[in-house]
Image (cartoon, rainbow, N blue to C red; front, side):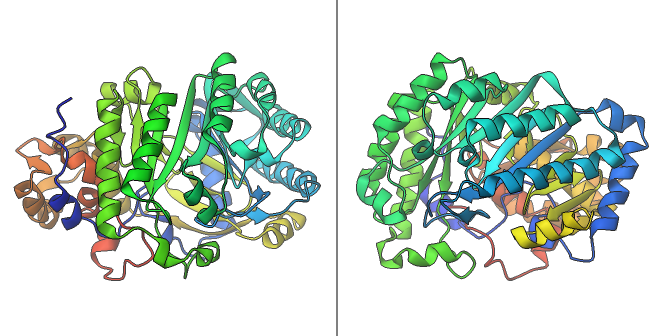
Length: 463
């Protein structure tokens, strides 16, 4: 297969800078504590008071924070515990949070997308999952054909649990694979065999799940180019519908579990770059379509179809086939979107429980978007999802003169155009085939906050 359109190692290194992943714009680091419960309630009331709120379905995200063991690379909000009885109290508080929402929005809001993340959602047993989904279906109207997905730790789920998930309506699974090499798994404290993952994959296919995703990470301790290529080869042989290949960001100052990783065991930047290039070449040669950022999918998968049709979207869960819509986020630390606002719940169980004990939404920070934020969000998401932004579409939607409003940004794009990442003409800006692999760097040009902020140490690097 022709892979000449892939960026050269020199281009990858040149644009290997720290920057956001743009699951939102503005990004979550811009949220402020001045935005609180009253602001969130007002955003909910605005939705409930419009026909839009009744016609346009919601997306639901539920955060389950519990894990049985600690993965050293993890940057997620999680609680490590062997005490499964903690789940019962948590589910009770989730139901209280839902009740606060339905008191404002009313019951039976339509839902077209539901995602259970964590942590490890499969920390919940079958009865607890049934109770959770029963509570959600009682309060929301989950639409026929809705996308219901759940993250799975292969170490903590029996194949028989897939019967429960399928019966509850889940149609998409995401398995945390990360790496298949034993020495790498031991270095990050996550040991699971390819055979274990294959058993789950076979069980998922036998039960008719529509799509199975594998998460992989490159740049982990003890990884080498040869070892990661072996993992990629094993994953290709298993042929999941979707594959996400993430770069490990070693930020031990921010994420305490990473302090257990010996920095001397991390592969050097040059090797990490070669791992990315090898993954790109091998996955494309194996017939996977490149979706964007770190995501690949088989051509028949809905994500690849949505990309070809120009219907790809992006939200706090990453790339999605669902139309842009409000995201109602439930659970500790969860992040959501309501109208022209973003919000985040309390990050600790004590704070989360305390707010609900007092009948308050557990929102502790957020952001009300300005008109400029909305314009820039539209531009960045068009680049990230459609690979182009058309001037006239933005002009008509936001009543601006794109070329005047973004004169400085268009000038900055000239350097990227010289490097073959974008092309510009009188109609708009298009991301080239080569530029799609560095689309974060292109989107960063339009990020007003980032351009004014020289400290980017809180972000992961592109590679």
